[in-house]
Image 1 (cartoon, one colour):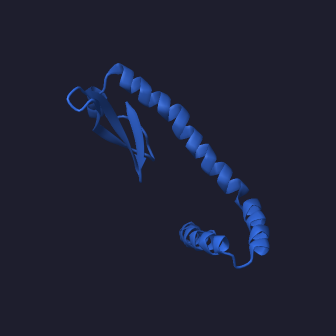
Image 2 (cartoon, rainbow, N blue to C red):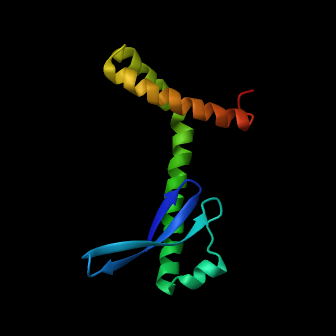
Length: 122
């Protein structure tokens, strides 16, 4: 069993070896909402006990780790921005600075929309 996060869902993927192709074939068994990662009764019936256990273990470890990373990124973002500002001052108008600045501006615009939507710009 393999799990893949896509936008707002977790895809549950079963890997079965195909002798003819001599490689594994991925089959999506179902999806679970990322916001509320619980197996429906129908999806639970499609999975073996080992696969259900693997999903629950993944939720308790990998998903939790990702959420903690997001929290840590948010809590340290102001400090990271300050450090990045020093780097941009040092780099000036270099090619690297131009490339990175475009990516940052794009991400910042998305962050600003989130701040506005949640009333955090006041």
